[in-house]
Length: 384
Image (cartoon, rainbow, N blue to C red; front, side, top):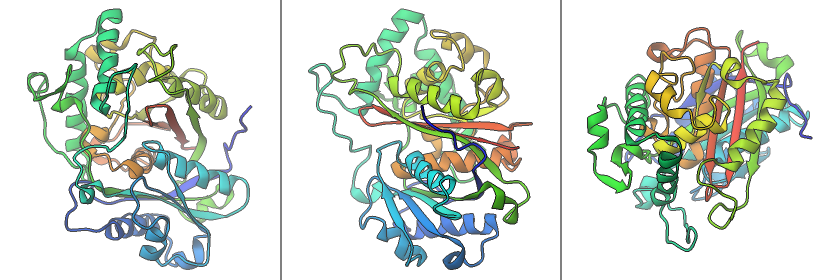
């Protein structure tokens, strides 16, 4: 049984650089932008004295943890690098929270960053050998779920298009998002076909970016700011490779289900739809977001169509999802994404999300799915 860290750690500062094709910046520039915003947010004016350790998350680092240590001049202390593909940022956050909760450090910095645009790739360079013997790209792999789900539960391309429209709208309200373009369902359906049924508008935008968070002991948190955000739970779960798992049914992601069971026990969540006020989920493709609604227990299996059509997950809906536009429009620099979600959830819980603010939010979840995919990372934050 996994132990709980509830009540032991809090987020007291967050920062994020502008996501996009940041040709004018190196990784160091983005790291500095994100970290110094987090310092200011936490009221930290002497990071060399106040930060005990650093946990970095990056899938494409050029110099490992030294990239962060040298950018921020944080030497003579532990600086660690975490890699767990798309769950990298959440896993770095998990290590940081565990270190604080265990009493190893009082105050730590988490930095997630990646700059894939400098690598000359237009999409994630994940190597998927085969799926049941067939060569696969990420879009091809996730698209396999669509036909099975459509046939089983009656949803269709229109529901995927509505998810894209929602996330494009939310992204226009986030100052640091990559894409700021409203689209219609018709535009989403008629976009350039990538891998049926995914058009361009069903696929997340890969970008450059960095995000940061300051974590401290819960009993020290109010020394930094009056409204710290408590860490209620954090979890990582893996499954067998779905490409070769004969029990994988293309209707659910096993790591999400397993991680959700674990984190809900940590956070005391028994009815996620009623107890969670908003969520950031891994919408690498619109179908991924749809399946995540069900895998996280927000709705019953097969019920996504009716909830998408009725606006349950819209910004003004019962349970807003991807309030800043998600990976779809905020962007997806792989190692930064999980920390960017923490950034958004902290702003929401503290009432600082401006035009995209969810009223009265006290509990927020973030979700990453990565690997084949066979890894899920979850974090739940709350205001006491």
